[in-house]
Image (cartoon, protein in one colour):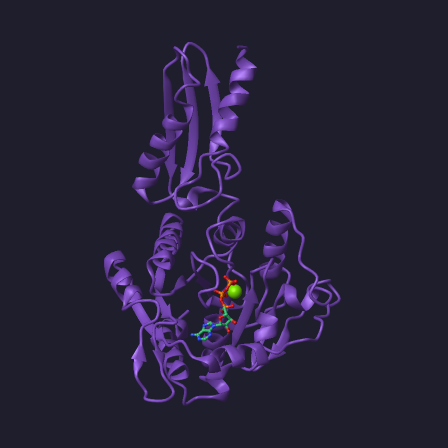
Length: 347
Ligand SMILES: Nc1ncnc2c1ncn2[C@@H]1O[C@H](COP(=O)(O)OP(=O)(O)OP(=O)(O)O)[C@@H](O)[C@H]1O
Ligand SMILES: [Mg+2]
């Protein structure tokens, strides 16, 4: 086989190796800086992380991926580990005027991220903070609907988009830009560009905190965010059952690999109180979120019950935390907001 054909095969194999903590591969991540083929094969990687485990994991993954391709050649994997700040040009840049950016994330879909983001943002705003809410879920935007926002955002003279103001929140969502319910059809590079524009080309103004409602998982949008803006931290939403917890672990790992601190785990749909006799039913299991937080060594922020009122309020575009303060869920979200406020008052 020619050297160039072998190199192509190696590239193909490496393009199937995910970067630890992410679903994105190491080629598109920009980690592979060289492939040298002589008597032996050397793959040079440059990673920007403080997590020493990343290099070990990468070495194993790359060696494994190239097994069988090398024939008689020996494969060496050379990894240059740099501190994240040294990745000049790629280092995240703060959004001017915005003091803190917090991501609301999950591994699994449908666990209640958007519900938490909308109501936590509303709770923070009702306590007097200036709050923005950016819907980074470009494919499945729900923030506009959950906030009852319908007006189209307008651009200022410089072509930057003005957020829509609703319930005291400055909001941007793909849902405000799309015609009706037409789906956002976006390819990889466009996803990155839109995500960056939502963060950089929206006139957020002076904010104490900008909450980001993320899509589920550990894909391109998450990667773009951690590379674009410095995050004060991430709030992870999960439901108590094992399938959700496994994915929550992956989300925690992803932020860990990129040195974003985990502000805590919120367990949603934790229990259901029967309207008749007030009995408590733990439909998705007992205390999974709390146990997981303990295992991972991250704070546990609280449990939100499964409550039809939550779904009704979300569909109606009225954050329940403002309109139904007596709900258990409202009180819990207010309590969680208070836990976060002291760190948001700083800076
Ligand atoms: N505790 C709850 N009780 C009742 N309904 C809930 C609860 N939490 C969320 N829901 C409802 O479940 C649905 C999914 O919630 P939501 O959209 O917030 O999840 P998500 O994690 O953002 O989903 P996606 O991964 O698709 O972005 C919504 O209709 C929401 O109103
Ligand atoms: Mg969502």
